[in-house]
Image (cartoon, rainbow, N blue to C red; front, side):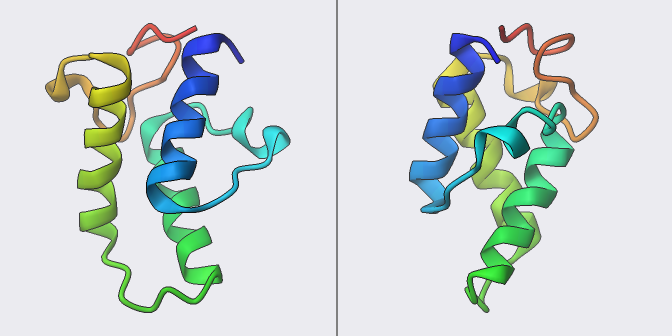
Length: 87
């Protein structure tokens, strides 16, 4: 993982108050994969009022704020490296 992706993971952890282990973070290569992981972790932590659509919108905002990418490019199939050009 490059500096951009490490900083993004840290921003996601802070926003959602979760801890993404480095080994798992390395496997989350698309926006959709990261979204599913965050939703699953929030459920695991017992945050019952989790709305997956709201989590996606917040995650997209974190990605855009952290990286400056065009929001229209932040789609579930977007690869952080190949599509969003994060290192």
